[in-house]
Length: 176
Image 1 (cartoon, one colour):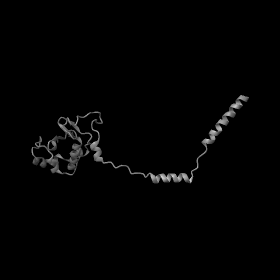
Image 2 (cartoon, rainbow, N blue to C red; image 1 turned 180 degrees about the horizontal axis):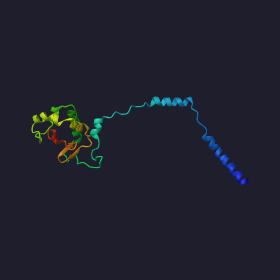
Image 3 (tube, one colour; image 1 turned 90 degrees about the vertical axis):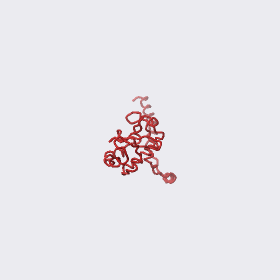
């Protein structure tokens, strides 16, 4: 081995030795370290996750672009000046349908409807109209996926249409 090669090996060993020594040393935990960690735990309590008001989240969810990329008509074009108010109404409507509160549903119908000219005729056929399938459709309707156009707003595939009237929100069509 030449002297030059020997010096190169020697320099490499001298340079690598401190590096190897530094990499293989571990810090030892002291009592002071543990007390600092415990002290921080006392100072920074873990908060429970914030509660989420699911209804408020539904009402306030963006609804200007649907998941399939379609852009619905504006609420104002559909005749609704207060979309959040209408969504609050829909939450109540969903509850009325789910709990068979016929009087509340019928009270919010704009008569005459195509098949039901009076409140009495709708009440007589209510259980046939609001069967399990329509109840499920109403219950699962997402508030951020309400179709709307110049005729109003609908749920499902047009089974129930709503409009904003001077005296409140009304059902304007039931297509069942």
